[in-house]
Image (cartoon, rainbow, N blue to C red; front, top):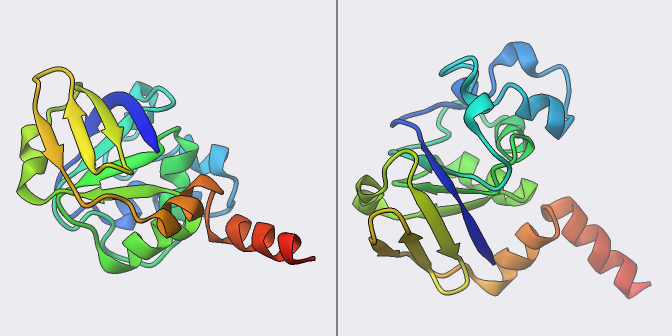
Length: 166
């Protein structure tokens, strides 16, 4: 899995209510949720995003409630991958279940700046910052997790497997 896009850096301890505030939880439509992605942090944040861009997060991204709307909102905003220092455990699991790729890089996240052009090879575990030449290694995405993300999440993955079994 390869990705290329502009980095959109967000801070530390960003909770799910900042990612998608409760007032927008009246739908599960990714496009509608995506229109309000990060509205709890900055109301028009999503207007800077171009489909394919990459979110870069600080420590403990996705803390707070276990709402699955948060990774759906990020995907709905056109962001297929989040590179972060660390992720809240329930958000981590929800993200993969919804088809959002997360890459944890620890303190190396500080090497990436807002607006930098990033290139990611998840299978190889390489993040390249094309703006400043930095290369960051991260654990390669296991093939089993890659299949879930490629199918758009766990539900689609299971449906396809069940259909293949007849």
